[in-house]
Length: 104
Image (cartoon, rainbow, N blue to C red):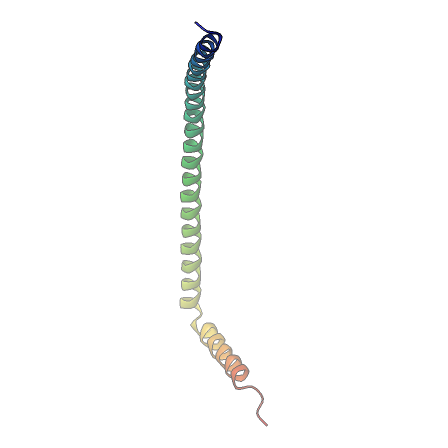
């Protein structure tokens, strides 16, 4: 073999070793990342589930509060209807005056 052929052969062997080392490193890196992504996915899934439960709970609380307020207003209107009729008339008068503006 000539010096150039031997150099080329050594170069091919070195490239083959590098290629093999790169494959091993890639496989090792893939296994590490897949394990980390699995943990991350589990943590995010748990956080999303907790957030959804919290949102449902707060929505239910808001609905209950709105129902209580509506019930209280309904009871008050049925007990004292003239207060609300007078308030509505006064509100209509004020709005009418604001809309009409000052006429000379």
